[in-house]
Length: 161
Image (cartoon, rainbow, N blue to C red; front, top):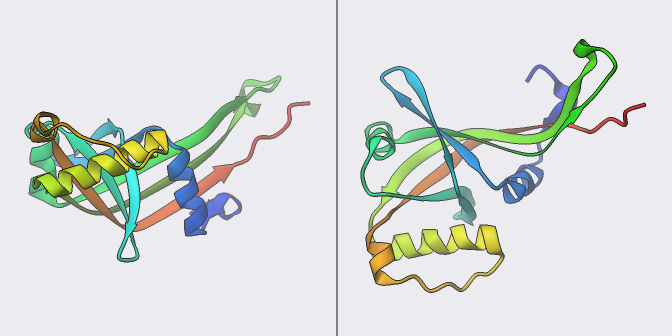
């Protein structure tokens, strides 16, 4: 990372940034081109590894790309703010972000889907016990990304003078 003064190396701090994020961008590769999808997500630690969970329709371009590659990148950010200045080139921004990659897979079993949906709902509501109608669970697939590496970066807000 070029700006070592902004690097976040503490995994707990990176996880806190992810917990505060409302959208995660999932990066896939489609014939040599980036295919980026904004996703709702949840996260859980399993067997010492951070896992990100998503839900989706059971078919489509995203599902095809996941099945073909088995690996994906991600990015999430929080606390984005423009810091104004008198001169155009002096404008800046403050933010916190996390990006990384890992193995990604489609989960199709009812138990796996229910687990993923619980993790997703807990991320957005802080409530851990949800019931999911069989009909709803039957219409979706769950996606699991097991994080292999991630980095974090933050630019703190500077008080404008």
